Length: 481
Ligand code: SAH
Ligand code: SF4
Ligand code: F3S
Image (cartoon, rainbow, N blue to C red; front, side, top):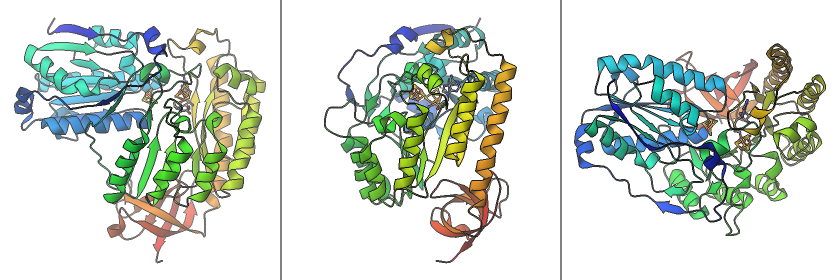
């Protein structure tokens, strides 16, 4: 049977949905690293795989910071690692399937290195039914922890090693704001900065408010300090991150707002400032002003639509109608004429009718998106939408999905083509993944560009003349000036 499983805490969806606490607790963490673990880590390696959104990317940077502080070194191949961490995403079933596939393949690591530790964390482990499957079926997993106790990782690894036990410690709670944890940023030019954790919107299809807890905003002074430091280090781009960035500070009562934060961070002088995700419902006139007044706030807004049917939007709990959404797009374009607008759209919410779907296509044709992430609705256990009896067959959803993707692609291509002949500024990321003679980077509107240019300019903002375009990226050559 192998190792004994010790359950320290298990997730509970009902607790996860509670929003009782008024006051957010701010914790300044002093990381506890047992000295025996430091000894153990010498010469040993870690591998981390991150699924899902920027919230997970940032959590992984914290986890890496912690592992490096313990003394582990990074490695590119999970089968060379002594500690493997999978930071998982629960947003749709296919996201979860990928993780199960990877855990399955990691069984081979245990044969090669029986003392290795496999840990699973992130949004999936906040789901009780997933923990049950991992516990019972995936015996190779040694540690299951959650989104609320990343700071406990050193203690959990140490205990699992010393006692040769499997450990489960996942809390379902509203959560705190934990400052002062280490952070390891691989990228030296672009940085994500958390401005808030959790979500209180409870869109009826979405698991995030259950996996991430209550909306908790960081204090403006802590965010500013982090951004100042990044600017000092020469970062060219900062993206402010949260599930609902424009609801920032609604949970604090210190008078701060997202518009004020955006304006203050912009004034630090970082060349490029972005933010994601904004909820259409939380957009304010002050935000428009901040965007209009600061040239370093990039003309690219991600504005999730989800559905173009006001009826479905209501059932989703989105708090805006398709008319209000379109009016917001109009206002945005008035303020920032060259703004690139991207979105998320869900097809096949329970009992979405043909008419509902046509309305989504209508909005798509009205807005002319630069890019969109499209999804077929995936029922998430514990959410209100998952309890609706859904009479729409999957074949119909798939047909709609294809029509949506085809309709969107027409706009993507037209938007790309409009760049041909223009010279745009590009932040150079590095060499193209497909061709090492080609550089790649993003325009201010967040469009991918592959171009010939000077590799010494990686990490700089350069001018690129666009000579060709495909649906998803631009091709060009670096020019002087
Ligand atoms: N906080 C962001 C989105 C986070 S999740 C927002 O509110 O916009 C990213 C996207 O995943 C969502 O915008 C939505 O389009 C999609 N999504 C969320 N739950 C889903 C589900 N159950 N099925 C399909 N897509 C889903
Ligand atoms: Fe999910 Fe809605 Fe919160 Fe976005 S705003 S994370 S879609 S509940
Ligand atoms: Fe996925 Fe959790 Fe983000 S469910 S999308 S990783 S908040």
